[in-house]
Length: 132
Image 1 (cartoon, rainbow, N blue to C red):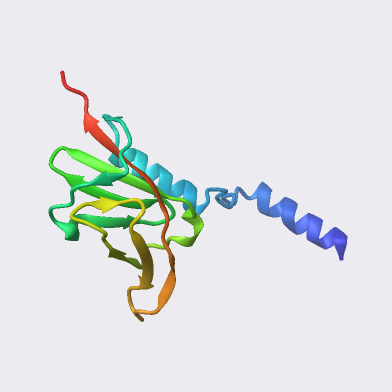
Image 2 (spheres, rainbow, N blue to C red):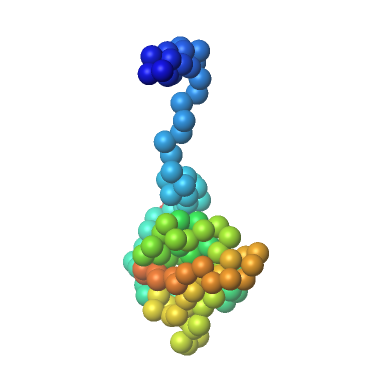
């Protein structure tokens, strides 16, 4: 039986079958974010930002929250990226007029509305295009 498995594996490789991708969901998410931030430079991190239009606040699976404000893209990474899924909706209880990393945040499932976890963020990092 071991010989059969070894021969089957060898014949699959010999026939040119595509190898299984080793890229993880987190690596794919990082690549998509890097593509989105291409040509931009990171600025000084801030613990709070002014959010004028909260419907532009976006969950980026396995990364955190992204908010576009004019020419700036703010990225706040989560401390537990593997727990954040694309179908999570953040529920944020603001303590003031700004969105801050220490605000109480939880996530719910988009389709069922059930609790999926707590969200803890790092600082918001602004990414802007370099001026010519």
